Amino acid sequence: APARTGGPADLAGLRRLAVATLDANWEHDHTVPSRTLYPHQWSWDSAFIAIGLAQVRPERAWRELASLFRAQWADGRVPHIVFNPALRVGAYFPGPELWRSATAEGAPAVDTSGLVQPPVHALAAWLAYRRAPYPAGLAALRRLYPALVAQQRYLAARRDLTGYGLACIVHPWESGLDNSPAWDEPMAAVPAEATVMRAYRRHDTAHADAAHRPTDLDYARYLAIVAAYRDNGYSDRGLANGHPFLVECPLFNAAVGAAEHALAEIAALVGADPGPHRARATRITEALVRRLFDPATGTFAPRDLRTERLVPARTVLGLAPLILPDLPTRQADALVVEARSARFGVARRMDRPLPSYDRTAPDFEPLRYWRGPSWLNVGWLVRRGLLAHGHPELAAGLRRSMIGLVAGAGCHEYFHPDSGAGLGSPAFSWTAALLLDLLA
Ligand code: 2M8
Image (cartoon, rainbow, N blue to C red; front, side):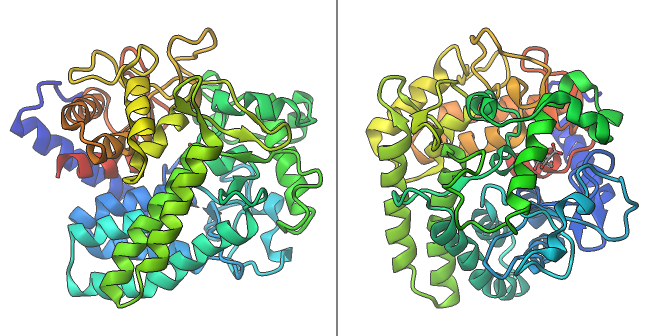
């Protein structure tokens, strides 16, 4: 493994490793998150990947986003997985045969899932353009703009179940933090038994240690929620009457708000009116504060719409609203306190990486996926937030810590939150892409 010293020679080596990782994961018009674990195209992965590609392969950055948006549904939803038809059956579980998107109204010609992921794409497109503002980039941005607007319209029109102005997620996979302790409470109410999984063959545990992944009981519930949504044609009408998982998530909605800020910038560039985007951004931030900020804990928490309760687990999802430039000082200051606390340990000099979950919690699991390990994409978002709210030293500390992770272990999917050891896929695309962005 490369040394941890971080001198210019090491940094050049790290950059080469990141570019080689992205090149190896490039697949005709998109980048797979990982050749083994995730061999298709994933929605928010593609956004993070485009940010890194913009620096080294700008033409690919735009192809990455364009290929994802070609799979957009008629209602505007951008599917969380776009399946590569060239791959064998069983290359990923659950595959197209379980999603059956072709039978749903408004689905594209290619097989996809019916779920979405945090809409970080407008932000990615804007950053990619700023990184490589060549004329083809502007043309690509112009083509993408209406699709990005439709993506937001879907979330506002179909997923605002309460009328408060927030989008709800209908599956933990939509949060991107699949088995986060944030979902334990809402998931406990989903009827399923681990034994259901005997009827299926999981693909992930053939490539990663089962102890580092969600459990069979988690997967049984994931499938039960997919079946409920799919059997209703992936329609969002009637979700409130019995869909098994309905949550307002702070990271997801922070992404929705950040998207409106980015769309305002893009609109100005492509000759559209930025005003409505700014107005929507303001309303989303207000709704986040009203609905998901918990003054008792000083952080944001998901709201379970079946019980109307805020989830008590303190996860890194709660720090995400920092990315909103218009987050009021009171909430921004509270989040900085939360980030610096022993729970998350953000500091000018970090002795350990940013965990995905409160490291003082009794059920903190340093090896298991989103229940403790450190991930570069959330760290990258939190760093942006610290910069947006005037904490350059903390942002620099977090950046150094993230670069140190890759220097020590390579472009892993996630990292042990104490030792920094690499976990999950060893050649993971968003780690490579966001490292390039951090080094730019
Ligand atoms: C993970 O999620 C997929 C399901 O969508 C899986 O576990 O198979 C999550 O880490 C998610 O955030 C990510 O987008 C995806 C691909 O990297 O993997």
